[in-house]
Image (cartoon, rainbow, N blue to C red; front, side):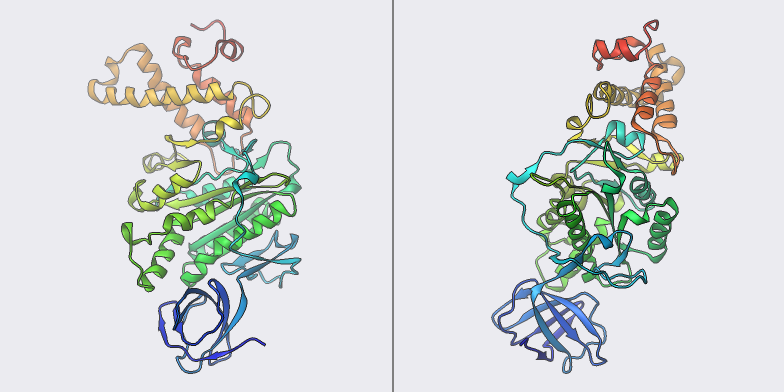
Length: 460
């Protein structure tokens, strides 16, 4: 028989402190019953000899110090999973909020996941086509990779997330075997409605499991939302053998919720007031992506975070960059010039790109073409700096061609509409067309055989 405990010692923010709880476990879930009979869920986050600290997911408003009843469950927080979770919308605690009733769960899984032995991991291979040229050609997303998007307040990262989720597909994979797990944390109701409506209009909602935590929801729920989402992804990938793309937005809201809870526990703060364990906490989420030996499925992760003051050295993007395999950086100056998606090519990279492109994956010319486009666009920045000093009229003919290349590259390659879905062949051909602006002698990053095959022979 489970024990029930009457009364609380104290209440602080989303935390309650109890005395006298016996045989409790760290991260054990407890049921908290209010005076009105409502039942809330909490998690034990600190155990001491004479007290227990519980984080209440639904908040502590209306709780009584004398009459609140606490009942430990004897188990960690679990999420009920089955194939039915696809096409459904959940709140941050994994409860259905789409009016379609409860999920008939095949099993219940611990939302904290299971530790993965690094030896059991398979190296990520094969690319995921997003339909966005700047990503597919130059910052290629590889199946099993974790590739974050570094954005800023007011930049169109929400639109980019929807476009990627709507257009993404894996080479030679059955569309029925590919699904999206989408988790939004700390978003406004308008943004949550935008996500849901966009998936419905694009016709992909049936293969999306959505987890929505609103800005008005308790911060405790914001901490558990990505864990519920990743638990759903692990079930679909490793038990149903599906390929899952997980999009987490906004990790900055998650980190700020973590900071708020840490502060309420009177923990010693670290950089910018965030807890010292921010790195390991983020890693506990990011490292749940990947592929396993003996399992056909995979989890690819795209965390999205807004950099405070567009500062890429801020603790959240800084630590995220150490854990993940590259980053996609959105640039405000490009957005202000009307360029969508405003992806800043030079600071963006995909560290696993080299292992999922080229012959047998995309096309034989992809690696050389990507290297040359990077080099040429980098040179464009130098030429633009020179032109700002001496004027464009004083530039050499080659430099003027680089200026033209830069303008056309941003206009034709980076820029594309929200509903424009380019396949990889179309993207690569666009890249070759742009390189034809430059003299052949400038194409030093491309193998001679590739150059002979894809570059006109009569141009010098």
